[in-house]
Length: 331
Length: 279
Image (cartoon, rainbow over all chains, first blue to last red; front, top):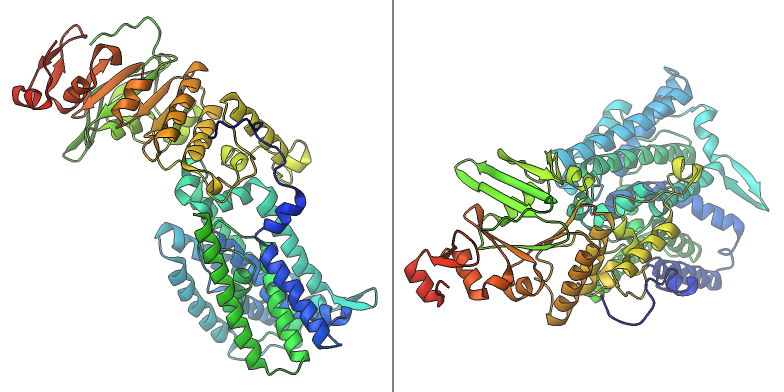
C-alpha cells in the first residue's frame, strides 16, 4: 500500500511486448530459437518442413506425458509412474484390439479408463493417506511395469487394426507430411493451455501449487482438486499410449521405460517450477521441443547419441539452476 | 462492564464453551460486536483468543452457548458457511497465492466467468471484469498500487496486507476479522494498515482486530474485549483506561469494577509489580 499519486489499478499493466519478455517461457523460448538457429547453421538438413515434422513425431509421446506431468508438478508433486502407466495402457489397448476380444474403439476407451484409474489411485494415496507423491508414484511405476510384463507375457503385440495405427498416418501440409498423432499431441497442449490459463479450474490449480492452505482458506476444495488432477494426468497418459502405439505400430512391453524422466526433463526445461504454482504446459511443449531439437540436430551433425544424453543432462541442471536463482531474486 | 445495547450487535455470543478433552479452550465466553465499530480482542498467549475467533468464524463449533448474527441465532457449518454469511477473515499469513496477480487473488475461489456460453460451457474466467472490479475495490479503500497484474510476491509486506484486506472487505457483508495485521510490518506500513482499518470502519463495516500491539489497539479500537482464561474478562473503552491498566486486566492483576470505568485490585503483588493502582 503506497500512498503514491499514481492512479489506482492500472488495468492493462506492462505492455504486451514487455510482458512477453518477462514471461516465464521467454527463457525456454529463446533457448529453443537459439538451438534451431545453431543447428540451421551447422547442418543443411535441419531447416526443413520434413525434419520439423519428424522432430514433432519424435517428441509427441514424451510431450503428451509432459502435459500430465506438468499438472502434477504445478501442485509441487512429481509423477514417476507416467511412462509405466502409458506402457500398460498401450499393451492393454493393443492386445485387446489385436486379439479381437473387444472392438478397437472399446479397447481404446478401456485403456484410457485404466490409465485414468492409475492416476486416480495415485491421487487418492497422495491426498487421503497422505503420502509423498514421489513415493506413491515410485510404487505405482513398479506396479504398472510389472503388470505390463505379466499381461503381455513379454510378447510384442503386432498386427494391430487400422483404428490404432491411424494416428501414425500423415496428411500433407504444404509439401510436408504431418501425422495425425502430431496434431492430437498439439491439440492436447492447446486444450490444457486453455484450461490452465483461462478457467477457474486452472486458477485453482495454480493457487493450490502456490499454497494449499491459502487455496483451502479461499474456499477451494483442495482434496477434490488434487485427486482430480492425478486422475486427469492418468487420462492424458492414456492419450500418450495411443500416440505411442501409432508411432511404433506395435504394442511393446519394453516401451516408455525412461519416458517418466524425459517428461520431467521437458517440464523443467519449459520453466515450470518443481516447487509448484508456476509454469505452463506451453513451457513444457517448448521444453520437449528443446530436447527433440538437440537430439535431432546433434544426430544430423553426426554426434553419437550418448553425447545427446549428456547434453540433455547439462541442460536440465542449467534450467533448475535458473529456476532457483530467479526464485531467490523474487524473495 | 457496561452493556449499552442500543443497537443490535452484529455478532453476539453468550456462554460459549469449547472443550478439547480435559482442556477447556473457551470457558463460558461472551462476545459483542456493535455495528460500525473497531473491536480489539486482546489477551495473553493461551488465553483462548484464537479459539474464540475460530468459533465466531465457523472454524470451530462450540459445545455450548449461542451465537447471534444480526440478532438471529446461527450455527456455522465450517468457515465457508461463515463466509457465506458475510464474515471475512484476514489471516495472519494472508492466504494469498504468491505467484498470482492481485486481481486473481481478490477473486480466488470466487472467479467471475464470462457471460454467455464462454462462461457457462467453456468455464472461461472474465479477466477484464475481475481487474476492473478489483481496481474499484482498491480505489474504494484508497489503496494505490502500480498495476493489478503484478504478482503478489513482488509487493511489500504492507501492500500484501492491503490486498488481503481489500479482498476481505470486497466480500464481507457483516464483519471483517483481522488477525494480527501489523505483526509483520514496520512502523510506516503499520500506520498505513491502521489507516486502512479506519477506512473500512468508515464504510460502515465493523472490524474485529486481534492484536498484541497495545499502542495500535489504543490508536484504533473503539472498544477493547479483554480475554482471559477462556472468557471475556472485560469489555472497555480505551479512553477510560491507561495502557498499563489494560495490560494489568489482561494478566489478572486488576479486574474491572461493577459499573465499568474503574478497576479493583485482584492481585496485590501483581498490581504493585505492574505499577498500577485502582482509580
